[in-house]
Length: 127
Image (cartoon, rainbow, N blue to C red):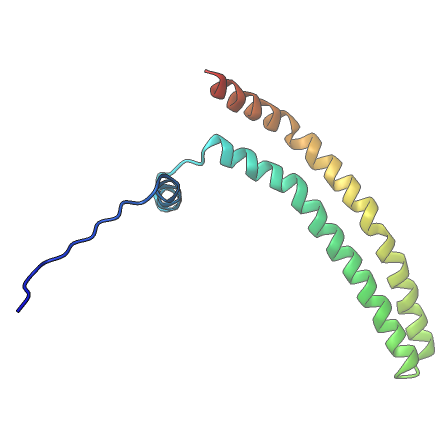
């Protein structure tokens, strides 16, 4: 009868440890986002909000146009179909100008904070 006891221990690597600490910190009640997380968040807002807004407007315009086309071709509702097609054609081209305008607005809104925070992070790195 073999009564040998084996015990294997493996400590997390430094990458795993950083990931574990990052996950843990995100669940702490009093956790304050780091400067880098704040910088990433603001940058994502500037990039993602205009894209989502433009996609929604473009998709709505395309769907309205498609509904109008279906009304003409399938349901033989010529007048209402033409009206919806024209409305869809009028909505869809506004997607890109709205994208550009909203991106410019958000860049202007967050530019000072992003530049200030990035300079703080770069100066901390040098020290």
